[in-house]
Length: 208
Image 1 (cartoon, one colour):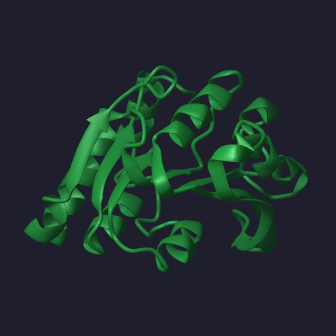
Image 2 (cartoon, rainbow, N blue to C red):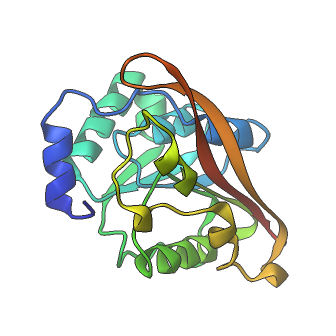
């Protein structure tokens, strides 16, 4: 489930996998920030990256799937030159990819799930890529969702994580604030019934 082949086949099998809307946790955090440089990790079809670029951010969108990235680039072109010119699309295996040190004002990874130890190493690299004063936002499916009837999740608990697990890889001396939360969210099951799911949300701001 973490190989380029798997995700290329997944994206290639349907016209669209995701909703095309930006993730709500990203919107809530970024609405209060000045535009700068951003890295969207696990960008998929590009909804978050395009939303950021539309608000003036210079965005590097990274994903393992070339199919997803081409789809995102096409969507960005359709959104107009002002948006498309602010986006760079990069294919990479996130288990080994190096984002660089202190490169971005915002690093966001929305529902990017890897098994440990790859996940912890990725989160350390993402944290290191945040500039002084910049923001790290990591959101994932909380393990408790595996016990919610009607929730479609791979029965692979090793892929799930809590916000506290993400916070544990951060050096508290390097961060002005670290907020680790479990945030409930309303959704519907495949039959249209209302359910509550849970996001693991890590929001941290690096010291200046």
